[in-house]
Image 1 (tube, rainbow, N blue to C red):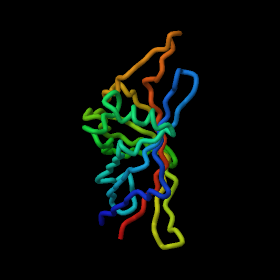
Image 2: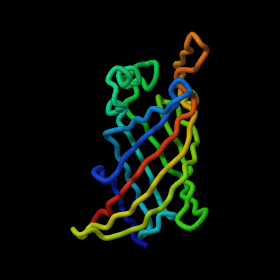
Image 3: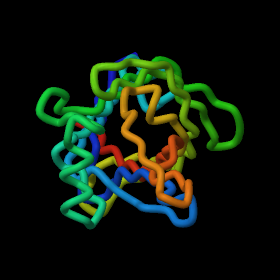
Length: 178
């Protein structure tokens, strides 16, 4: 069967993360520049030959310039030495109706660890311009310290400033390439 290449449609995709701040509220951030490329056999994503996602660390945005600068610093992502976050999918496993587990390896700050994320498949459609598109909602959790993002602080009252658990939430629309 022929190999089909798919690439992210950045105008209809978003990559977000959420982290607890002071353990009482949640801060949302996103990566403004990212890419996803998938190669499948036909239109069957369970037969993906390659799934690669990258995000440019320098494009991180939490709607607070001072915090974003801190996140890009060596305390967190160290953007000067580690320009991208990278995920390589290894197995796209069907677990239910339109529900999948994507097993792969996530690299942050030069540290690579196995990660499994949940994927909800939204379907495949042809848009009004004749482009074939596939939609996915990707969710998961990681521990930031597993990837060397170990900066931590405690308030005078003993509250943790930033939680270790990071929630991932992405809406990805892929465009089938000719």
